[in-house]
Length: 95
Length: 484
Image 1 (cartoon, rainbow over the protein chains, first blue to last red):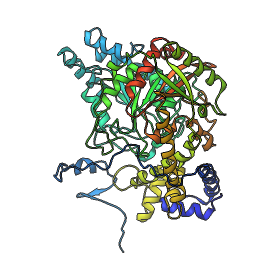
Image 2: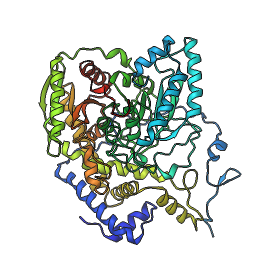
Image 3: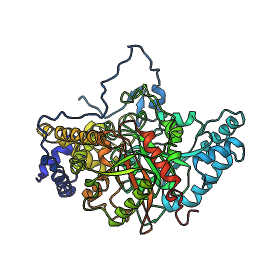
């Protein structure tokens, strides 16, 4: 099942990745190959099979609603590309 | 000194015969002398290693030492190490100095181990050959024109070349076991949940598991003792006591039932590999074990299911890399969208982008049921196959990898052939089962690994079988020519 170049552009946009026009045929090919490969899954009859999200029979453990974290903002922001007074700086979002 | 196992090093350190500082200097010298040939390390932490070694020597003289105190190891560059670059093999994190330690790193620190550096790896753990690293490929010490396997290629190559006594790795589809097999060492993927994933950069959260790579099962057992255990910071970590793994290695193999799935010997497996595995099984039979034919009927679906689940989870996990808070940021972003798109496209390599795109597609509206949900159902079938098998056998055995180490560049242009390197390892990740790869011999002078998969939390049994095998063989003692 071949993806179209438009499919590739849409997927790239969802993933916030840029794909040069020149790279599109390559991606169409490799992604289509992979999708063809994984469609072997359709050989299996999975009616009534409960999907397995996780190997262990667990559900999300809970803990008491008590503050345990400390303020480490300075340490975490020491490695940020651009910060100012505790804020992460990005290009203007609102006009 | 580099020929010693972790167990032997521990003894000599505790008896005062050698000091950790001297041992650490020796390994650092070896790294300097040999690693240019292998490229197994991204960062060498010489100064801090020597500091850790001195502290370990103090603990040793005070009699406050454990089996890993003073032992030099390497951490795969996927484990966050405070104050030290943690790159995950990617340009995206080339500038990332981690502000915290992964739980695994912390545990080794507390045990007094010495960290020599961070091992090279496939970018974001996506690969089976260590050829996708931003820092260049790692070479196999047994033949430097060949791959060491991946994604924990640097970990495996450095241990095989005796640049460290042991290394940590991670395994999502075979990334500890397959490089261990291709490099002639022992590697263990623990049961999902056995080892904390806190600080272990996430690829596929329902599959990832950290584990040890070392020369022997005994060494892996010593490392696993430090690594394993519940961690409140990892909500998927199992609330289960950690056995004394080294103490459990001595059990005899008499009566052990080993299942050999006929599906693991399908076409594509090198005849030399098959021959070596059967010879290894003869040795194990000689120790009292029984080999039984079994079938894992859904085995052929493991790789397809994995290449939906893993990319899907990776697309979600790698969404955090956006150029805003840490890691790579593109120059002069025009607007927020440009910031995201260019930081990500410039920061990630091709294989990572490919997998993010497959994952995005598989999770997108209209395709989720056909791909992701279907893959999770197949995962259940594969798991059920093992459950059924373990009703009649104790472990499931087979070749870890269908071939020995292939040449650098041989498979980079053909992702699907690359993916099929993991045909025997992937099922254990999907099911969450523990599995070990042990050196079983050579085929055309390249190492062959034998894999054993166990039931949930059966690491002691797996390491025990490997240990008994290693008491009667010496494949695990071989040093690659030129690295003595």
